[in-house]
Length: 120
Ligand SMILES: [Zn+2]
Image (cartoon, rainbow, N blue to C red; front, side, top):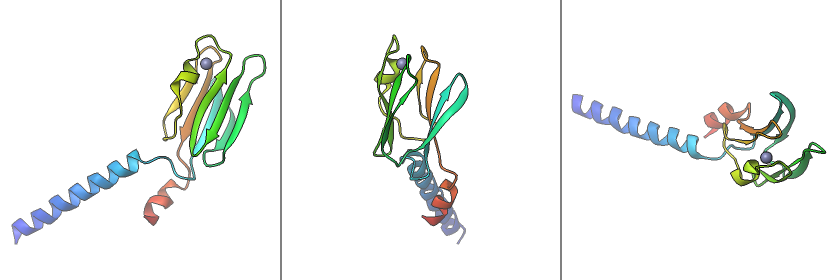
């Protein structure tokens, strides 16, 4: 009887670990947002699930493209183009940084993400 209980706890633990890993690895769902931070201040926020292309700045510009739940800087006139080479980001906590323009594009999870998990 005691061994059976231990088995159940072990199986539950493995399933929980697998579920957590799955939640951690999957892309941010509809509630995710793209934060645009310049000089440490949030200047814009866009929904990650709405496709759009925006140009941030004028003389110093970065083109932010949000498509299929991913955000990427597709063009910029900064010196190093690190932001463009970073490619697309889609998971909460990931970011694209453009040092010359003191710009950060950061993905954050949606406020309703906990509701989403309960609904699974
Ligand atoms: Zn850049």
